[in-house]
Length: 325
Ligand code: ASP
Image 1 (cartoon, protein in one colour):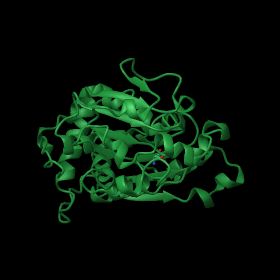
Image 2 (cartoon, protein in one colour):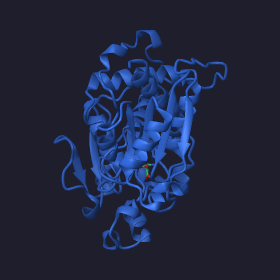
Image 3 (spheres, protein in one colour):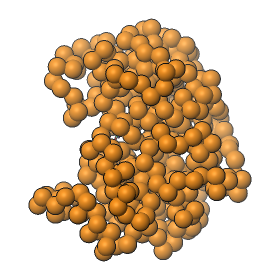
Image 4 (cartoon, helix red, strand yellow):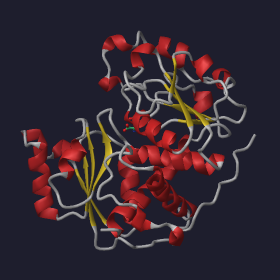
């Protein structure tokens, strides 16, 4: 089985930027379907050109983008940086581990200090506190992009996941998509449930009872506690990392028992549709939530495609927020 052809989308010129009426990207929950599609159309345009090193649209020349990551990151921060640079912007990364935050400076004082000094045109922010980017957006005069806060939202991850599904399945509407594992603590799950339901997918979550959220963002989302039942007829199986940093010890008995009951093996994947594709936002805990044989299967795994699509998705977000200013 080979992965389907990449599906081409609308061109750059055809994207109606004026219909995207937001000053910030703080979550997916305040985006409607049309706005999500505008981002995906533009992201798709950039994705088609990603390998062309000569393609440097330079539309953000003269803009300063400030990166403030109060939590660790590999993929998200690097791909925002790549996106900013491909659009011609200047990228300034603050090394929080060696900043005055460690001397007890408040979040707001840190941000206002940097804002006064750098006059950024956008701030990309990750923080462990619930809605910290929303709080900062209320105090600065430039767009703020949430690069992940607490377990609440990770909008650009959900958007790049939607782009990946669209490019590999040709559509999102009508697909059966399972989001599996530590749903309760995952901001990726939270933003994805919302985005994929708005785009017309049939979303289900599969989790042990203690890792199932108390409330889901849409009533249509089905809940399963067994992988065997939940994977039936799925087109996309999205695995999640066990968020041990947000978890109480009692929530899973052991990694081994979690893998035995909820780990995605090739045998379990056989319960989904024969052409089902697998996703994981990374970082992966191999053989805890996903078996090597699945993660590394080039016919079934979209994991590196997700990473790749992070750059064009973040280019689209920066383009829409900064060019529309
Ligand atoms: N990288 C994603 C996030 O920041 C997923 C994860 O950490 O599990 O939320």
